[in-house]
Each structure stands twice: as structure tokens, then as C-alpha cells.
Length: 335
Image (cartoon, rainbow, N blue to C red; front, top):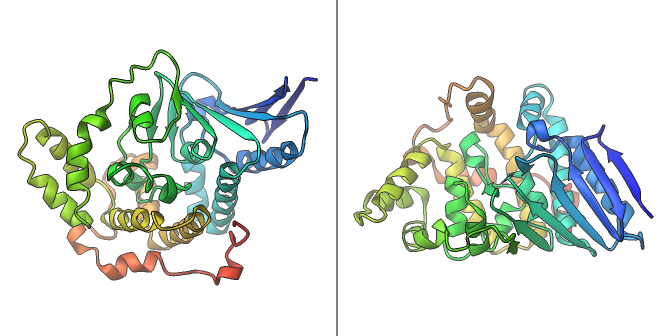
């Protein structure tokens, strides 16, 4: 029996055939960025198929040739930030609940991570049982560039990447390819056209582990400045330049987030991230980052703290302050 479904005003498509439900994120012009309707629709379809004997396998893919999913719909989120942040609370509660559900779904889910896979796209894909990358895969968690932190479970999956690579990916947000994703455990298999020998992260493993193990963001930057190996000095200089453009406060928060995430369960990581997200709304660097990089595009964000040296322990601790009792947390049902 074949069935075709459409959801979220056509932003989601599904085809059920031969025991498999193939879900297409259908916003190719927006690189399949996730709207709130898409998150709701995916949640409803997972509910529907969990006990549907016709469906034994789910496949997630993106429409078009450019992206699996470039993340959340940041422009729409910015509009909500400046009008009614209450809607944003619901957006992230639903998104994190969906991502957690994917991690624990009783049926096999496969993600075809073709093209761009960033932010919210990583949140969908990392919980699937089979993560497939190809020659066009371009993967990143670039949230610190807009004054945010790597959410959607980044606390969990980045903290479990070998060595200090997860911290590097979370703080700096570089775009990596299929071979790198396989190397650091963010993908399971590749299509045949991928050259697995072209792995930049493997070549950078030694300096990444050496510099990013220093215990704090200022110490990492200072260590990078001391790099005198001609093989790694250009990379170190480029990394310092990238970090200099990020929100100093959110760099320090991200460092603490990933360190904490290594000790937390998946459910507790998502609960921590929801607390952090609301703290970001209050602190304001995310609003300024989106304005400067995506709305006005002047690329000159005015961060709350202009230098990494100005970020205090109190600044960072404020992001991790509990906002609810355990029983009243919006994600309390995650086990």
C-alpha cells in the first residue's frame, strides 16, 4: 500500500511504501530550514508511525540539491524575538522534544545528510540510527557566530566526539566534509564517491587536542598564539581570527556547556539547553548577532562583552541558573 502525505502547508512531504516512510523537508529555497510547523508535523508523524505495522523504517531527506537542513528558520525566529519571545519558548521546547524522541525512537530512522547540514539539521540527524554522508555534505554547528551556543543536543553529541574535536567544532564552528564527519563519529557511512583519505580533522587532531585542552577560552586563545609549528601556524592564526568574531560571552558559555554535557544524560543535556536558550534571550547577544550577520548584514555585532578577558565567572554562571524546579521543567517528561 502506498500513501502520500503533506504537512506544514507543504513544507513536509512523506511517502509510505514497501514498509518505509520517506520524509522530505520541503523548503529548498530556504535550504530546508525548520519552521515551527515542520517541527510540529514531524512530531505528529512520529506519533502516527510508531505503532503503524506498515512502517518499519523511516528515512529523512531534504528537498533539492543544496541542503539536508541548514538549521532553524533564523529570520522567523528573529521576528519573534523582537515581538513575542513567548512563542520562541514553545519553538525550542517542541524542537528539543522532537530531537530527543528521534534519539529514542523504537524504529530505525535513516538520515541522508546530503548537502548542508547545520544547527537544527544536526539535531534531527544525530539522533538517527544511520547517518549517511556524501560528497556534497557540508556539516557545521556555527551557532557561536550569531551569539548562541551549539544546541539541539550539541551538549551531548559534541562532548562525545574524540579528544577535543567536539569543543573545537562547537567553539569555532568550522564546516567539515564527509570524511571528517566519519572520523569524529558524527556520521556512520558514506556513499561511494567520498574520498575517506581527505580528512582535515585527522590531520589537525594533534594541535586541536593540544590547544583546546587548556581549560578555558582565554587559555585556548593564548595557546593558539604560541603555535610555532609551520604545519599548524596558519590554521592557528585562522582559528584565532574566527574566535575573535564570536560573542566572547557565548564562547565561554559554550565551553562550559560542552564540558558539562560530557557528564550528563541526553535528557539532562536537552533540559540544560532549554535553560541556556532562555538565558540567551535575556542576555541579548543572540539578537545582536542575528541582526548584524543576517538582517542588516553589517557584520559588526556589538556584543555585551567586547573582549574575552571581560567575561566573568558570574556572567557564565548566570546562564546555567535553573529556571524551573525539576518537576516543572517543560522537558521534565524526558527520561
